[in-house]
Length: 71
Ligand SMILES: [Cu+2]
Image (cartoon, rainbow, N blue to C red; front, side, top):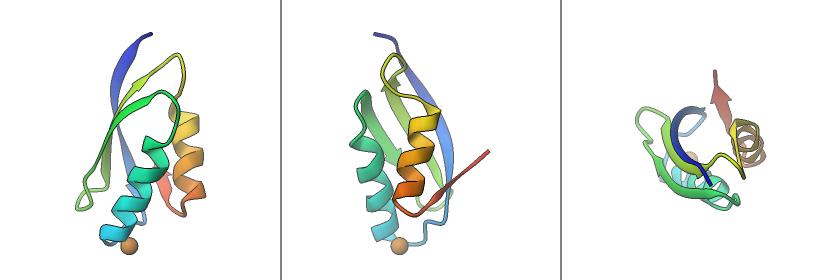
């Protein structure tokens, strides 16, 4: 297992509900250990196992929840 930390920029969040929805979508992915959502900046810090999960999964989960990931 190789754990890493990455910050992604999530777009479209406007309130505490959005923050919770994004947090829930990402923390539910297998291999994700820790998620920290900053509603003000849109920065989402992820600690995860690179053998199990990655950026494509994060994009899918965030867009399924109704938000976007900026490049
Ligand atoms: Cu909201």
